Length: 245
View 1 (cartoon, rainbow, N blue to C red):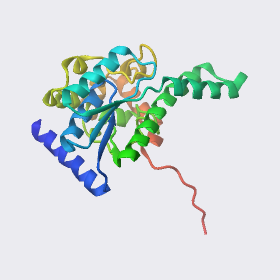
View 2 (cartoon, helix red, strand yellow; view 1 turned 60 degrees about the vertical axis):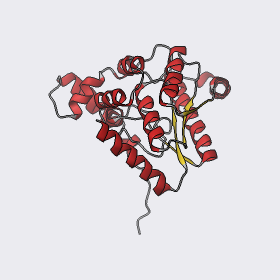
View 3 (cartoon, rainbow, N blue to C red; view 1 turned 30 degrees about the vertical axis):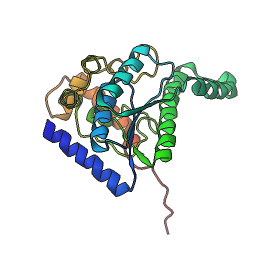
């Protein structure tokens, strides 16, 4: 696993060199994926890496974990509280929609706005330092489309996209990520009590098994294939109209 870490670190260093930038930045949520990325970019760019904590009415425990991750790996940290920004923006949109506001769809729109505000924050900081924004999506999330388009999916590079969730856990152990972060229920912290697996309706273990070609129950396979099909637009380039001669 240490050899794998070395390969990813070398890849990150090459991305920095090829892009002509000075370093790397990642949003640190307190979850395992961002914790692994924070450790990797610290190794790749010891003096030019940054972890940004972006609370937004977030679970205090998650923010505590994020701080522990930054402290444990020794990366430079910064906190930008987005709660007030989100409240002003979302309320203005709701006021404009008035009677047309859809409570059910609004919950998802609210969650996606949170992810997109975090993306905008990271890019503003990245531009200031001439850094690349590093994503945290793993293979399970990428295949199923479990990420917000132009939110946590709005990044420059994806070092974990070829790793299953289980492999990310192994990387976390190798990198010395705090055990409480490794063991916690994965959550995008988009609303109170939200967890990835409850929202998707399937476990990461099942998705990992599917990606490795192992046999899983048909019901789980149907969920994965439906999510993959419905999220194709997130992974593919924008559809563009081309005039015919």
